[in-house]
Length: 306
Image (cartoon, rainbow, N blue to C red; front, top):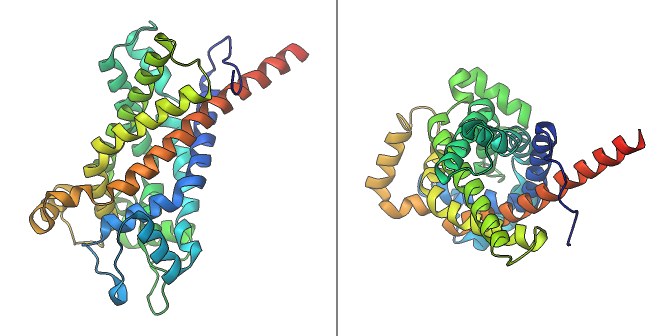
């Protein structure tokens, strides 16, 4: 057995939510530069590069950012990103099993449709609660740190305050509809695919319930999720990053992208999206399983000690 052994009893809701939030933060620390590169590629075409700066490919984008803005630019919005993961992941991942059990009435064999419904539910709940953190994260990642270029925001709290003062509550929840759509798709695809791949591997005894099994399941979930969610992700990014008045709605943003840039615009940044989602899923799910098991082991030892 590689890593901690599975617990004999199901982990309580608090353990699952805490494990999911912590694991998502660890995954963000490892993959944030890829996410920043993805955002820059997605908004390219909407906002012209400064002084002829153009981004080409994920690693080209990263090298260009390091050369023109410094290495720290790759972690623009990290604080907001960690705030986002604490809120998002603890709800959308931590609540998934409980919501799935609610829909099945407590039975173990949940159908694919029930799993999809549970994933969509927790994904939508997470966005409704934590949308402002995503708006700030995207705007930080999009802004350039160049001499002579005015920065929109200087800090996370200043960004929340500035958006509220200039755009109101609607500004903080800007792009909620496309983000709910995107996160519902991502969440149900991510969790359901991981669930199904992991179950198939264990059912056919290809691997035991340990790190290699979690790695393969997470990698597959990351690829499938990227294919399905990329178009919505591009629209979400552009709409949330846009100044007031540029787009009338998320649907209007989609239409302008289609008419001006063609259907390939919806898959801008696909490679960094896959690199980011694939690596993020691997780190998150592997870490999630281990933290959850470690917490249950600590809980068991504490109870035995008392």
